[in-house]
Amino acid sequence: SLTSSDPVVTIASGGTQSTVTIAMDAADVIEIGMNHTNYDISESAGSVMICTEILSTTGNLECDVDASVSTLNGSATAGSDYTAVSSHILSFSRGSEILGDVDCVSIVILNDTNVECEDVFSVSLTGSSKVTIQNGSSEATVSIENDDVAEIGLQQTSYLTTETSGTVEVCALLKNGSLECNVTVLLSTSNGTATAGSDLVMVSKELTFSSGAPIGDLQCVDITILNDTDVECDDVFNVTLTTTDSNVDIVEGYGVATVTIERDTADVITIGLNQSNYYSSETAGSVMVCAEIIATTGTLESDVEVTLATCNGTATDGSDYNSLSEVITFNKESLIGDNVCVEITIIDDNDVECDDVFSVSLTKNLSQVVIPSDAQSASVMIEVDQNDVVEIGLQQMSYLTTETSGTVEVCALLKNGSLECNVTVLLSTANGTAIAGSDLVMVSKELTFSSGAPIGDLQCVDITILNDTDVECDDVFNVTLTTTDS
Image (cartoon, rainbow, N blue to C red; front, side, top):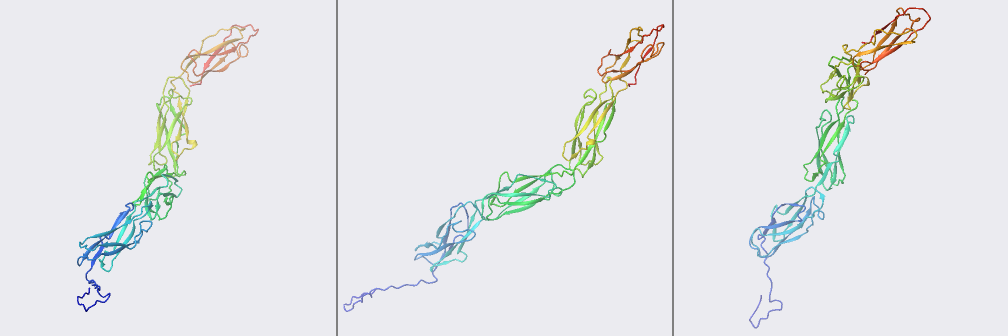
């Protein structure tokens, strides 16, 4: 400022004061930078605080200084994933002199339900004339960790295919989630009764659901099914869906599926009875009945079974034999011509019976078994015990009749034996002094004692006596009882 006490000096108007500006020494600066260059923040955090820090200074701050920060899109997009910041001013006030002083800006993180990979945006720092940005501290990276997951599961929990199909398609299904990045799952097979290399080709394949894929999107694998001529049951293997992708949850209950391979109906084993007729004596105690492998299209991959059962004929369960219904098993090492036998008990008694018959039959327990009609059933004949006989004789040893009687009844008598079948005897006449045609009508008649007839049962014949006018003495003829019945 300019003043004067001299009366002869007048200060000109406007010339009493002037300003002197001292330009700052370019060497006198404050150095700032980002206090972190990397930030990891959850999508649900709401915001992230980005701070700048005084890193060095040549002296005290005697004026305010500032810097600006701005955001820049990366895989994260302003408006979708965060709220943009543009040239936001960060200030360090006059008088600050402590290294490490900070000024921060809060950047809003937007939460959504989209399934995203980790999104990234950056924040850049720009200084002013009084501020220098420290090398390597001018930018920070913000990684937004996704908190939403895609729900993926197998399309079905069970699949059905045939041995001749060639392949079976198994699919993973996007059940829920809006994808903004690719996600992956692993589909793999594991053995059950079906074995990789024999029944199927093993699979372990990564499936990718691409960004933007809609709910309901399918990613599928064709699993190769191997066909052979082996005789086998329906086989099963498993398909499992797993993931190491943090953006994926496997839907509960849809992580494992079973695949059933229905056997080829052309692959069969033919089994039948090894005889159409079996014979046993009543005194044998038992009879052996056998099933036999007649043919097969290939090797057996498992045991096969048939059921052998008896059925009454004239022979009765409990009286003549013991019935049974028994499962016969051919193990998987069995070959054509191998047989498996069952022993059936034959009951011996003292009853008088004819040869008795019962039947045996085979039924299949598995669809891969074929039983030919001519080898499905057989008869078992129990030959009568020759020691079990019925005793039959004429009721009387002599008969008396008159010439005028017209007939005389002659009877055969069951004297002993419990009959379980019909038996026969032959009653016939033979001439004596009485002559057939003159004195009687000749007889030759088969008499039957029926099954169940009691002791004392009679079977009779009326023999016709011929009356004439001849003068004759008493005449005699003979009646004979014979049999061919064993």
